Length: 382
Image (cartoon, rainbow, N blue to C red; front, side, top):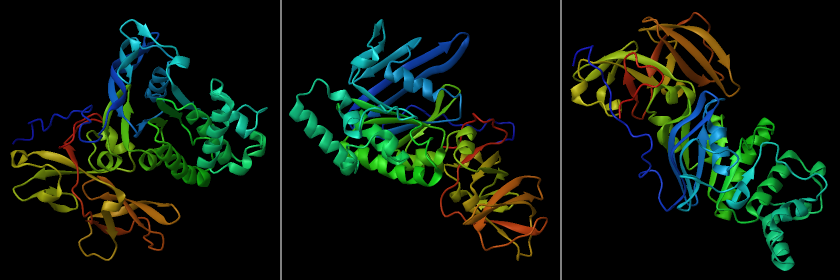
């Protein structure tokens, strides 16, 4: 195959059949939304299965929060349909108001009533229940979120993590069809944020609730979700299990957004791809069939896929920056080809700037690839 040949494969960014099982609780079909002349959601389709946590992940302004508001009924779509348990709640001339959708929402600010205790906040959405059932439900949820002893405390007397758990219990209390979480950890400090991710996932799973979360934090999305939908420019770039999306991104945008990404250009040979760090065996490159022989491609490498060896005699680059991250250090190496590659090392390994090194591939998994020169929306090898 010549260099001028376009090297692409067709991928289906809304095919979820291999990533989720069970009945669809929520379905969006061809949904679009405009504000004035700006289209912020473009023909977006996805489904959320019973009992799963799906996260909409993307940069600020990509349309993920607008999508959440459309699901909640806080905005009306300009096209397409939204169905909840098979019934249309938006579209085709129908619009069910937010209060009639049976949807729970956890906001960034938690939105607790400051004049009500934790117990009263949790009970707020249970006004139609008889007293005995309401008290039993509140007790059950306070136990679920480990706040049995804090039921009579007011929000001002609770920590940020405790307030979040009260907000979560209040949203779960009326047994919603689906739970929406809008940047649920953004107001917490870093250490608490990490702990609360695990806690919130535990609570949601134990409650058996179907949930859709929104975040721009890649680590958060990867740790809390059963599936991740990466959103860019109002469209879903890729949807699937976190490990699959991370290891085999379908576009350069997804590859770059989900952590540090470097790209090694090379020519596909009969046995290997020749790159700036040496040959990479073809069986180490995901889905690189014989038809691509002779093509120029770019191989995705993460910082933990490569190592900068300062003792090697066959140096192929020099260190241009060093970023101390506590347990690890990220070195950026400029190869003799002019490409730059990030290498992650243990914190006690010291390499000086301008030092010559050999970048060595150490990944024990298949590497993804992209056509040479593909833009951020380019399609990956499948």
